[in-house]
Structure formats: structure tokens, C-alpha cells
Amino acid sequence: MGLFFLIGFILWGWAEMSAFIYISSTIGGLLTLLGVFVTAIIGISLLKSQGNAVMSKIRTELAQGRTPVGSVADSISLAVGSILMLIPGYVTDGIGVLLFTPGLRTITGSWILHQLVTNNQFKGFVHVGEQGGISPHRPKPSYNADDVIEGDVTEHTKPTDRLNKH
Image (cartoon, rainbow, N blue to C red; front, side):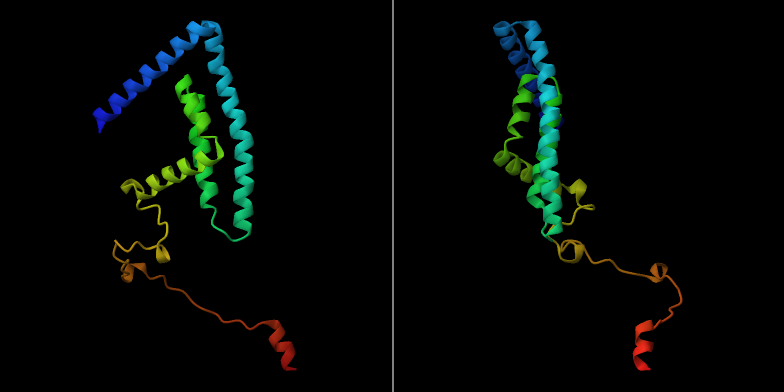
């Protein structure tokens, strides 16, 4: 896994440097450097505008009693896209802009969400689609005497019940 990560990191650096050299030879070094800062600002403004729209959609879906899975997937994709646009480089900026595209961001966000849910490191925190929050692959929790909390119970009647009896 470490070797795969190292090769990916080297290829990413090579692609970024190649894009930077190609763009700087076309429009000049100063404009290329300025473009990196402009894309970061564009990424922040896109995150703000698109993020507000997604958050209002999540609030609407929650108010209607629906699970906002699609909106959560959109927000994950927007967060990843904005992080990629903040990283200096044109390749990451291009991928970040693609993640702001409405149809593609839902697909990508759903894939990222699926990867998080199925990852073994997050199994103890996430129980999506399980009945009662207990995984069918894990045994049900057993309770022992240490789990008992002692206390007193007092039953109260409603004041309206007493008024209706008279």
C-alpha cells in the first residue's frame, strides 16, 4: 500500500509540474502563478455558494422527514473539490472543478460515502442501513450486573385527570 501511495504521489507531482510548465510557456510565468491564486479564490467562492445551496437542501429534506443521503454525498464532494482547488496546481484545480459539477458531484460523493461506510476503520462509528443500529455481522451486546443503574420511580397523574373526575 505504501508503494502504491508513493508511486501515485510521484505521478501526481509529475503531472502538476508538466501542466505548470506547459501553461507557463504558453501565457508566461507570472500569469501562471497568478492563475494558481485565482483558482484558489474561485474554489472558496464556489464552496460558499454551492455549500449554502446544499445545506438548505439538507435542512429541507430533514424538515420533510426524508434522509438527505444525496445532499450529504453532494456536500462531501464539494468539500473534497474545494480542498483540491486550494492545493496549488492546475491538475488538482481541474479535478476540483469537476467535483463541483452537479451530476458528477453526487456520483463522486456517493462513492466516497460508500468507501467510508465500508472501510473497516469506520465500522464502529457508522451503521448505515442496519436494523436497530446493530450490525448483523456482530453479536448483540450482552448486559451484566455492572450495566444496571439503580433508581426510584414516582408515578404522577395529570392535573386534567383530577379535574375531569369532579
